[in-house]
Image (cartoon, rainbow, N blue to C red):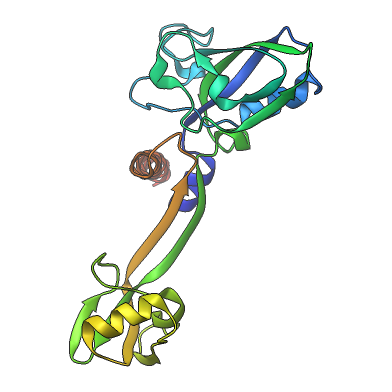
Length: 240
């Protein structure tokens, strides 16, 4: 459920409307598509979704909309770093090196773009989370010593020290050719490790595109799930 929410419902900001006055080697629609995929810094506590904005009621205002401009002459490469927010420099794209279009001599680009909150269910440009995965919590034993495999101080090699068994421990030989295994051997004076998994604990891993922090994505996803479960409970109560 969390994975589904993070992929499709987590709210983030992305380029939406655009106005162009430019001469470039690409069609405006292609430039619009590329601009729309640039991750924009998002503060979920500061901005409203445009359709839910109590200030403008969907018309667009500073509480739900950010305006960006691009004004560049060729020759040269237009990148995400050329997107200038009107009003707050902190809203510049986190990744300044995303290529948009290469301008030649006599070519230029003047663009005004608006960024609004949306979610990945409506369009991929609003999908902040990628590479979501789950696994059981890994367990390690070096001799008689139990170790936390995810402790940063423990050299943990996923290639040679991660068990595929669900509950039973298995003995895995460490590779002296692997730098991580070599550190483990030197640290704990063993040639093999007992590895297993704890099925009562789950490790969840994901990354974001930079528009939101991983913590913000997780908190927002849990909030959305809580609202959906509350609605489901209300509907179930009404049917009882």
